[in-house]
Amino acid sequence: MEKDRELRILVGTRKGGYIVEGDSARKRWRVGPVAQEGSEVYHMVADPRHPGDLYALVNNTFWGPMIQRSRNWGKTWREAPTPMTPVKKKRQPNFDASKPWSPVNNLWHLEPGLPSEPSTLYLGADPHLLFRTADLGSTWEPINSINEHPDHPNWSPGAGGACLHTILIDPRDPRRMYVGMSSVGTFRSEDGGGTWKPKNRGVEAPFLPNKYPETGQCVHHVVADAADPDTFYRQDHGGMYVSHDRMDHWTRIGKPLGDDFGFCVTSSPTSPGKAYFVRLDGMARVTGEGHLQVEEWNDKTRKWRKLLAPTAFPGHFGVQREGIATDNLEPVGIYVGTTTGQLFTSPDAGKTWRLVPFAFPGIHSVSIANPTPR
Amino acid sequence: MHLDSWLREFGPRGRETTDADSLEHLLDELEERYPRLRFKLRDETGQLRRYVRVFVDSEDVSGTTGVATPLTGARSVEILHSIAGG
Image (cartoon, rainbow over all chains, first blue to last red; front, side):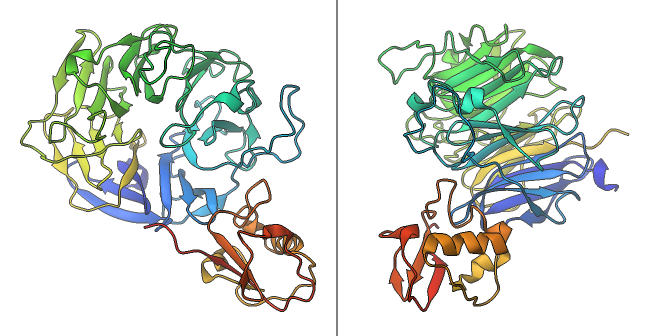
């Protein structure tokens, strides 16, 4: 099979990044090359504009954060320049130069730009940092409207750190962007990252005295509906939400499920109007019902559907914010990675499920390198 | 100076000599010779990373004088990673 005709699952784990290669039926999987064995890989992603280009965000316990890039589907990797907090850059007037600046802690999410900007990448990091490159990562520029935002000193970290973990770009206009940050919430920019407005109206912050503040919500992950770029699905600390107006207003949808805590959410171009969540016990942070469950939200009928039988995979599974992904095939494939190293796959929109027969280290992220169209 | 074997991916593969008068200047010199070491031992604030340990004449200076440690008269500097993680 030609290399770019294969579907690959990219699995970021506590001990390296794994590439899992599938057959055309998406039923048999082969665990292939491992990137940065032994190091934390928070996110691994393919750049669909450049088939074969993969990125791994490595957060080495000892030597700090670094970006690794492969140009050959993971056969070989090289360290690429990693953005660091600028040391002597002139800062905005409100920046308090008497305070030490914060180094980049962990790298959380790399987002390829639109096809119309084939050399643009965005990078989200801790502490609440956003970077952009226009040359595929050879040089990075900080987006100081976020990194030196007047409120930045007041933004708190969540339990996973002060991570900027969600970056979304409107496919119709790259100047319209969205970011999500732990314990801060979601923001929208209409001018290519020049200015940002908080967009958390309607999202409850149950852990704050003011339950509906402008910012301070602990967003866990957000995805856009692939068929409707004005619609977003959000897994927040405070529940599951949908917005139909570019995040101007959010409506809670998870209450019928009971405890609608969780970390991850995904959607797919081949299942428009649907989003997939993994609900967790809000205290224990594992699947509280004692088995793996994926909840499908149908935004047209406004109904939930459970995709797994309770007997399919018993256990208390943890799933992190990038722990679920979908492919762009028909019917949609769904992939779930757990903090205990199981990788579950469904090639048929959740009708049937398999466990990839390989015990991975604890899984941080799952993403899909879709087959390149002919 | 002698670097941890784990660091040899980024830096020298054996012992090296230096005339640097402080740990900070030694690290500056190392990073100039081996650019891939930049930000591996120190973060952007110039401080040693949490799990980087530096011994000057067998004394651990990581948590005390740190990068300000004078090296005048010192015979050996060892740069190691501490045991951590799981």
